[in-house]
Length: 102
Image (cartoon, rainbow, N blue to C red; front, side, top):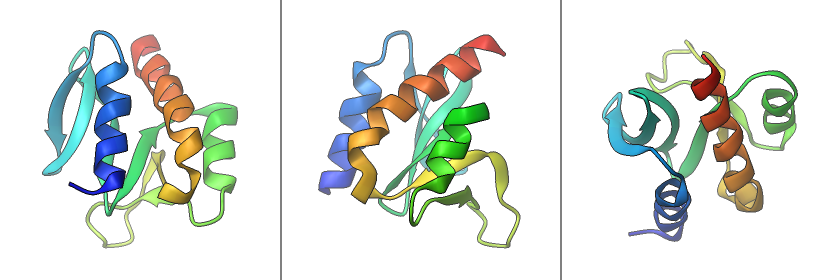
């Protein structure tokens, strides 16, 4: 298991009332059956909105999540490089709040 995978799991497992699952064949965590974070290409991906979405997307190397690789990115999902791992937990909590509000 890579350092990136370990950190992803550690962050997800700390959160309350969530379950580990799969989304598009990728590991994810869900709350109330709604995915809010996942792990892809050794990076963490977050379902975000508003200011937090803009902040995550503004980081160098961050991009909209395109799991198919066919230039059809998912607008709410931001893939954040491991270089910004110090922000992963904060983004995970914001993503969890976002799906909990929906």
